[in-house]
Length: 116
Ligand SMILES: [Zn+2]
Ligand SMILES: [Zn+2]
Image (tube, rainbow, N blue to C red):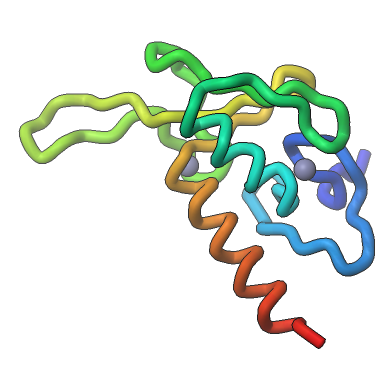
């Protein structure tokens, strides 16, 4: 089954002119990156453009980010801090706030580069 064309978070197929950021397990689309940033910011669950449910993981969940493979980071004092992560219920995909930021940047640059 080829799933690389589908967004990991809303399950929609790639459409012409829509920018996406690639990931090790599949891309994330601009809509999901934007919605995801809002989800990790305020913790409110939201529906994606593809009808899936995007929600913020509780800090003690040990689900690794699909993009960077981490679910916690070490602070300079050696404490372990869980990463803020978003999860898609239906597709069981996870992305951390830092990777959402990166994905947003990639998509922004791609859309500027292609402008008119
Ligand atoms: Zn998407
Ligand atoms: Zn990550």
